[in-house]
Length: 482
Image (tube, rainbow, N blue to C red; front, side, top):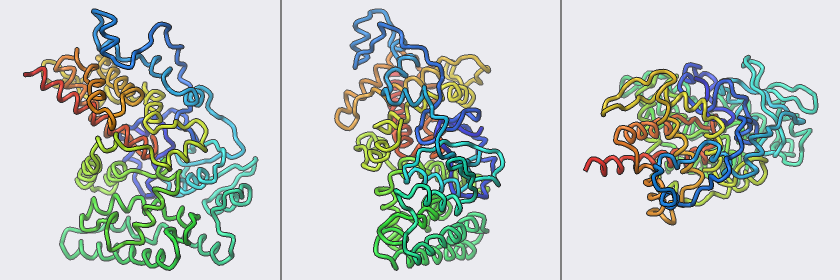
């Protein structure tokens, strides 16, 4: 299964990754057209919201106003949920952009690191572009700029600099320009991460040798960063040199410690310059953390393609618990998202609304995947769900998650009220239904792939809402069993 949501693609920076990794479920339907900048460009033919179905800010109030109506029936329909998205988001969904001066061609399976690099360059330049996926990986990345076809990362970057010079990513000075282009050539081999992941670490000596090779390569990068005044590779300005290193350094911080806990990258005082680079990328390059960066869960999952299944599982579990979901729900929208959504048409003002839009747009595919991977619960026993049947709970679970993302009260400022909002929607579910719903939330929490389905910031709030609803489900089960 290639994709689950809607984002552009899962560019982890590992050109050698096996395509079998993408047989796992994800949000984006394999047949769905791929969007460019905006996250929800598909027109699904939603019917207009039914008149008179106005929902109060509190489900309990609405339930009181309609005696005899179960709370389960009050979870909004898909039409209602769609109508509650911001108008700008609905316009992006119903009227996707199909033409632009720049066409961006990338690989179908989203494995090509050069596509990730070019994608980041396009977004940072603020270029209006349309994305097209192609089956032959040798033909990507490529661009058509005002009808002129350009292929290859270096050639595409140079063409963008010439045709769209307003935001420069190549330095003007000849020496710095030459150095920036050298990083493009050296980026894939500068840090031997793939060799490290494929290496024989059966014995302590072998593992130590692999770790030493990695540390020496990182120290060379430390020296390169220290030689310039600023947090980026060529000083205090983000350039194509940093773009060149994005795929490998994005993977490095998640995959290296998952395989060897002694090779911790983020927060390691051995690598202070690299810490500065990571921080600058997360806080100063809006398109990176908002859209192009892969998250730790997705990158650890990709370790399976290196035959590191146990390390992948351990890394994914650690990624989900690295931050408390309560902390994620309570935090303010970071400035990089504000910058990103202000310059990209069709992006929601809040990451959680972006996540909700992705869910709503891809609901049919996601419903099928949820029904396929989550067993039905009948009298306390798991039972394989007959194909095409017993879809009520998967559909209810998806709508409940979308409703929580769109309308739940702010957890940080009013946790009791927010918990009541979720708890009310669970109150008339049986223990079997709650048990199945808890499994559904666990599946949805893990299924999203970043950045193929969405950016890091929307995915964080998606996973946090799944964890939150899952916690409330467990509380409801305990209450019913007491």
